[in-house]
Length: 192
Image (tube, rainbow, N blue to C red; front, side, top):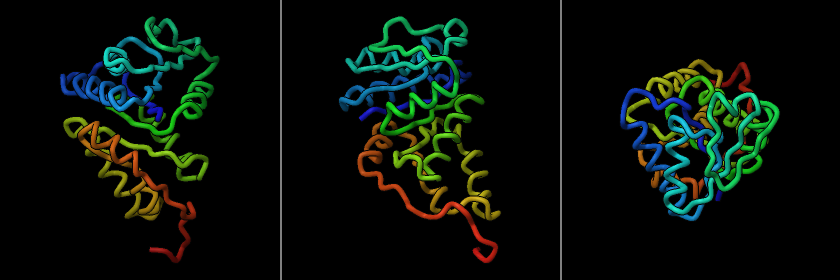
């Protein structure tokens, strides 16, 4: 199992965020899985990588050339792939991984989460996508996602594809038994 983690290159203002990144990195390594992530040594990205490495895990980073200096490439990874663009980064991370988890983060984290979830919705992959919801960080997003279903833009089955948990071990356990849905993406005018 190779778990891709999307998360902030900043640490955020709550210590819970850092603690969750450490717990997730450790949980990935302790189950013999590999961590795939954005390759930085700072913020939550650095925390999840350091925790996985300290627990004896394999950590694979994927970092675009333009961000090598800005995000400060992690020097101690098992593997660090330097790619030409964000598109290549996301594609390589997707290709290397068997599941995806978003920790708290900013616009980049959300963009990565939504892109990989959209790929699952469209059937480009059948891998689990989820949120590690730390201290209610994603509560408002979950409410908005429910609204997209109520408004007729997202099927309930596609909304339910997003695995959400507050505990990293429980989240990863749910990935072990994940069954992807197979339903048409489009909602017709007569469906409610």
